[in-house]
Structure formats: structure tokens, C-alpha cells
Length: 289
Image 1 (cartoon, rainbow, N blue to C red):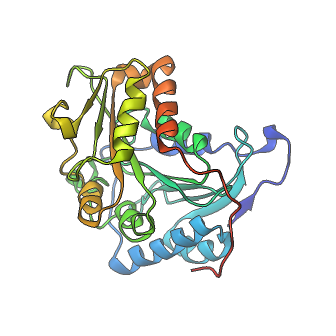
Image 2 (image 1 turned 180 degrees about the vertical axis):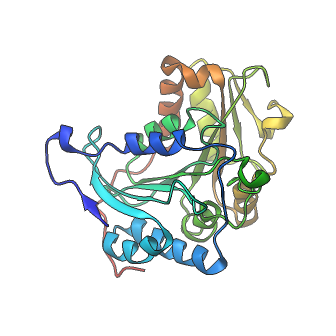
Image 3 (image 1 turned 45 degrees about the vertical axis):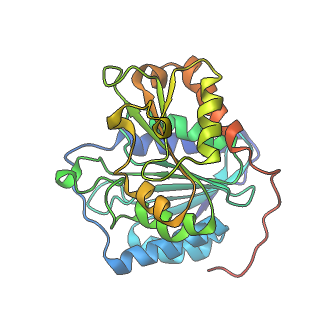
């Protein structure tokens, strides 16, 4: 079913933060999971491409059969329209939440592959989504340790999460910023900026410099300062980006940063500044894919 909030009263609008938080809260290590078949994965990609293009009825025709619920509303914080597809959150087909800002052409994909395990990352991602019109937020709905660890969206080549990046978003030249977290005891730095398996990029350099300007201790994988375990060189989305020349940036925030709004709010705002999207343009509507 496609829901649509039409009231101008902010109190009557569906806040996407509530849904994002609910999905993240429901993730647990022992949850069941099965990867989509190649046909299901292809259909999910078609449906999500339609969602990103703003063709919600056409997206629902495909995604509903895969267990997704498609809806749209106005974000009460930004006043911008959004579209949302949420997979089942119980059972085995926990294939993710995909939130699209419809106010501008797609210009950024914000990805959170490890909700609950990397606590609070969904909140950082949502702030970035609200800061950059035209953003797509991809949130895993499965724990990285589910199904014996094979469910991990950052490693699972058969996931909808990975398929969205490799066949829909990346090939269109849309950069991805992937948000993660680590324990304070893991490393001395507060934020790690990495390009994973790929070379440094101007976008990654700008992001690192802007975050460092907030006063946080920032390390970078391309200059050898980042902790070896936080460089994301085995991340599947990063490997795909490196192979195809796509812009992909991996952000790690320590626990203290993620729990202190006075730290992470400026850090995420710095990322938005570094992305520096062009002035939002009205969307053009072509035939649905």
C-alpha cells in the first residue's frame, strides 16, 4: 500500500526518523536472514530505481511483491517530500530501508550497513540526509552477525543493499558516504576517513579536512595515519567503487563522538559542507524505468 501524508500540519506528518529508529532498534544478531534470489534482487533494483525517480506507484508494483512497504510524506523537519521503501523487519526477507529525498535530483547515497552493532549511526546518517537535498539513505535491516555473519551487508554481494550501489547508484555517478562506528578503546583517533580499496579522492580529502576543522582528531587511510583495522579495505561496496572509479567514502566515528551531539552534529554538518551539492534543481520526470 502506498501511503501519502497531505496535511500541512507538521504534527500530522510521518517523521522518517521514527521509522529509521524503529528499524535500527529491531536489528539483532540472532535474527533470521536469507539473501534474495538473483531474480528477486533484480526486481528489487528495478523497484528502487523507480522509487528514486519518484514513480511510487510503479515502484510499489514491484517492491510490494518482495515484502516492501512503499510510502511517501513530507519530512516535518525540512518540509521536503520523501519516498520510503521498507522491507519486512521480521522473517527472513529483511532487505533494508531506503529513504529518498524527492526535492532534488539524486546527488548522494548515505549508507548504514551495521545498525545496532555500530550504535547510533542511523542518527548521523539521517542528519546528513536532511542536510543534502536529493539524498538517498540506505539502511540495512539485518545485523551484521546474522546468519553466521553471512548477512553482513558490507560483505554480502547477494544483498539488495549491495545491488543498489553496484547497479543503480554507483553507475549513475552518485557518490556514497558509508557511516560506521568503533569503540573508543579500538584506536586513539575520533574519526577515520577512508576510501577503502580505492585511492584518495578530492571528496574524501574535503570531508576529512572539514571534519578536522571542527576540532576532532581525524585520521586518513591514504596517508597511513588511520588504524589498520579501520581502513575498510575489505568492504564490498568500497571494492566495487575502486574497480569502477566511483566516489566512495567510509566514515568511522568513535563511541564518544556518536553519543555527544555537540561532537557529531558539527562533524556531520562538515560532511554536508564538503559534499557541496549544486543548487537544488527541480526534478524532471521521464518515463519510469
